[in-house]
Length: 472
Ligand code: NAD
Image: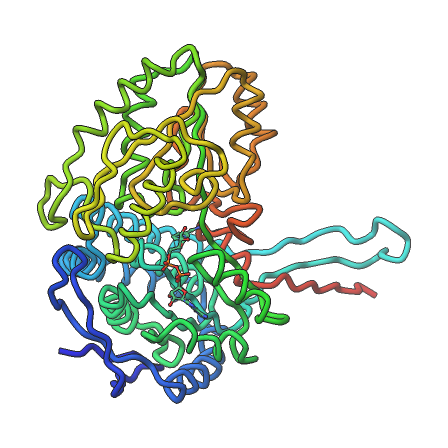
């Protein structure tokens, strides 16, 4: 059955049909209608109308709608997991983890919906302000366009839908082409939860076609998660709109000689290979103090070799296929190119169709693509460093700055790293992959612009409005 688009409460099909294929064996697992320009036009008109309703919704209603969405998602948990496994090749453990987190994101949004307050402040700092009071409130910005990537299609959509509803904004969601099926379920959930139908649309659409909504004045904010190339290009076209960008990275993790090496090795294996390395905060560059390099590398290689690669439907599998053959071939080419330039393989490196087993490289150079670009595949490099300052310099030698990890038991190094490592989030005795859904999350440098994490997304999806009162 071809799944339709939800446009302001109406399900609409189109002649442009996209087949969805299971990345593990290329079998057909579904099909979706791709939205036309008329569909996008209708979604924006509905959103503009819907804003008249959502801006008036009291916070208890917005909170109830989000709680109901969480209840409905819990009821459809297994269906969502299954959709993610089939459309994206996500292994079962990761799909269960993501759906559990999406539930959390909705519950956090239900709580934050009640907390969008304001401030009362004294305005008489100078004589001009005497006998007056100042107040601020956060007002919803209006229709939000949420564009999501393939790698975490459910939780990242909830990171846009949840804060938009909490703030009182209509939202149009545009999922990635590889993973359109799970978003259809999310759309059914939003509709059933009682959000004004006009105020929600879910459009499966080709990326470039979506640009007409990016530039349309009825859309007041773009919340984009995806690649830097697309994100920064869209920001340049968005004019005066609010824009938040959650983009990629080549995360570094430092393991110093005073760290718990076994713990660091275990966390690093999980953090480098979760979701087949297709994670914006995946551990890509492991930097190990020279004295403990061999000991750490042995522990790490043991952990990596214990990971099970294969059919993502198998509940024991840790690493399923990459999203497409093209992406797996690209990863293979980058690894071969590094080998040709002198790097060595400690584990993996050989591709089987879309399956790319966990790959650990050493003796790499900073300018190899496996280090200096976002690899977005189950590939990690392990390199020794001499001094702490060297490690900080290497981690910062990157166009990106999303998250980083530091393993050390010295509080002075911890505070130094917090000050000097150029990232949006630093995790101590944790890998770069650490995330819980209410924390501020986002990058610096090429990794992004703005923050998600419900409360912080709500700040971006609302505008501060001042009122002063002259008491006469
Ligand atoms: P992508 O940029 O190819 O696609 C992301 C979305 O943008 C898709 O929905 C796509 O259809 C849409 N798109 C593409 N071209 C467009 C255009 N011209 N106009 C409007 N929309 C357009 O990214 P992807 O391959 O789906 O995802 C992988 C990337 O996402 C990686 O770089 C990864 O690091 C990043 N990512 C970042 C975060 C984060 O929170 N920082 C989370 C997950 C993924």
